[in-house]
Length: 109
Image (cartoon, rainbow, N blue to C red; front, side, top):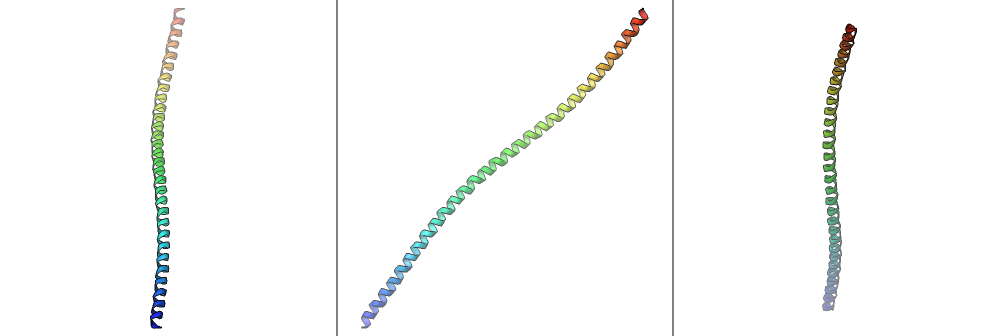
């Protein structure tokens, strides 16, 4: 009887061990599945970070272009103001010359 009891205890221990092995195997599969999911998430994160960096670079380029356009606009405005002043001076000189011509014509009559 003690021999049968030992066999029964051994069978129970073996059964418990096999159940534990199955649980460990299931947990290992679950860990592998989660690890694969994490790897996919990391790849997606890297892809999105690349997109963000590209968008940031485009924004920086656009800002630099806008600054260049604003500077060109300021320079154009200054040039236009200078040209307007020169035109005004030219118109004043023309008016003065016309006045002299009229005066000279009157004196000649």
